Image (tube, helix red, strand yellow):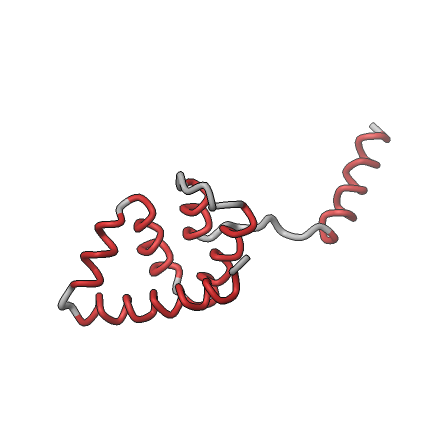
Amino acid sequence: MTKFLLAAVTAMLVMPVLPPPASASPIETACLRSDRPQATRALCRCIGSVAQSTLTRSEQRRAARFFRDPQMAQDIRMSKSDRDNAFWTRYRAFGAAAEQRCAM
């Protein structure tokens, strides 16, 4: 019983010191799951980090679908919708920022 109590107290003391588990962005996850040979963990993490700072969570999910369905990106790019055009402008800004920050 004493060992269990000691372990529980130790765990409670150590827990605040440990960083919270990282949550991968939808873009990072899609990048890692892609079949592209250049998609290294470091590169995908960097791209995901840029996505988190430039796109909303909803926009990240939308852009992550481009990895599975590149035609979707083309459809949005060619769309006449104001909503799609605004998204595409932000997506291009994200792409430029990711290219600049994550170039290896």
